[in-house]
Length: 278
Image 1 (cartoon, helix red, strand yellow):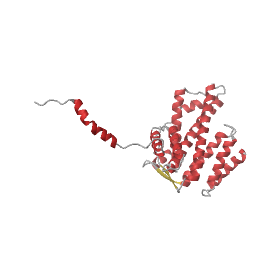
Image 2 (image 1 turned 90 degrees about the horizontal axis):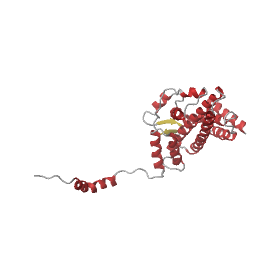
Image 3 (image 1 turned 60 degrees about the vertical axis):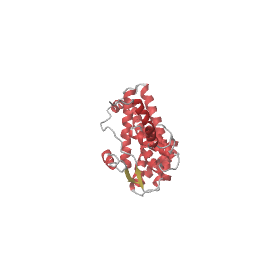
Image 4 (image 1 turned 135 degrees about the vertical axis):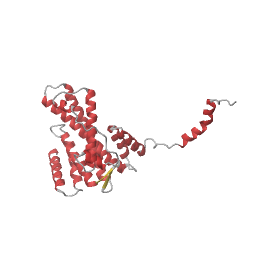
C-alpha cells in the first residue's frame, strides 16, 4: 500500500528549481537609467497618468542617450496638451467670473491655480521645443506611443463653470482629467498631421505608433506655441518676458521651415508679439 508524501518535503525538494528559474527570469532596466524612465513613461502613459509621463520623459532627455530622439517629440505632445488643458480651464473660470462677478472666492482661486499650472507646463514645452529644434535629427518624426484613449462625450460641467458655478472639488478633478485626456488626443492628432480631427489622428496611430514629416510636426508644435503666448498676455498673467521667450523661439524655428504663406503669416504674428513684449 502506497503512502502519501509529506507536502513540505515536496516543496523543499522543488525549492532549488524555483530559485534557479527566478534567477534566470528577465530583469527590467536598472533604476535611474534612461531605459528605466522610458519604460516608466510608457507605463504611466498607458495608465493615463500624463503628469508622471512628462516627468519621466524629462529624466530621459536630460542626457543624450538611445531614447532621447524618441522622448523629445513625445514630451512636446504631452506637455503642450497639459498646458492647453489648463489654459482652457482657466478661460472657463474667467468666463464664469464675467458671467457672475459675485462668484465665490473658490472660482478666483481655481483661475489662479490653472494659470500657474499652465505656466509650468508651457515652460516645460518651451524647454523641450528648444531641445528638439537644436538636437532632433532626420526629416521624419517618430511618435513612439499609442494614441490615447478618451471619452468623446462633451464635458457638460464646463458650461456650469462658464456660467459662474464652480462644481465640487471631486467633480472638477474629473473635469481636469478629461480635459487633459482630450487635449492629449488633439495634440497627438495634430502632430500626426490631422489637426482638429481626432478620428483621423487615431488612424495614423493604428499600428501603435506614427510617423510624420518634421515640417508637419513642427507646424503643429508652433501652433501650440502661439496659443500659449496668450497665457502670458496683458489680459491674463501679464508676463511679457514669457511672451518674448515663446515668440522668439517661434521666429527662430520658422526660419528653418518652408517659406509658405501660412508660415509667413505665423512668423509675422510671432514678430508682432516679440515687438510688443520688448
